[in-house]
Image 1 (tube, rainbow, N blue to C red):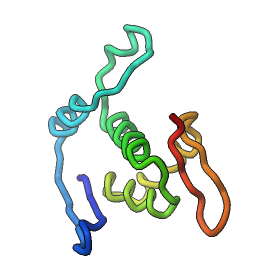
Image 2 (spheres, rainbow, N blue to C red):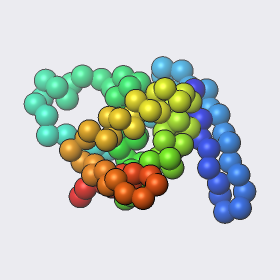
Image 3 (tube, one colour):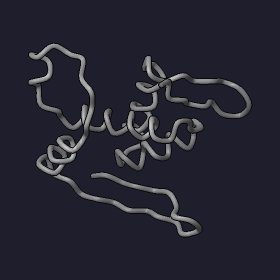
Amino acid sequence: MLRIRGSIGDWPVDLTLEMDDSDWARLGAQLTVEKTETPAATAKPLNQDDALWQIARDLLRKAGQLSGPDLLDQLEGLTGSAVAGKRLLVRLRHSSDVKVLSGGDTPLYSWIE
């Protein structure tokens, strides 16, 4: 299941999509990710966790910077689960591609180019 929450202009959006394994596989196949891994590692197919991880990375990369609560809301919408959203948030926090700035009321997650 994939849940998307947010807004389009002034209109609130709360959309839930049910996806089976083949849907996730097709979604994962659409991701264009540069790989610098060995050929044996690139032969491994994406599972659902890997696909969500890539989508979470792309989400922050495209946004450039998001506050912790905003990013968590989007990750919860992506995964359909608060626990899975928090797991992705922690994984992003420890990623070498992400810089987390603490200050003010909430942390800011920034993608490092």
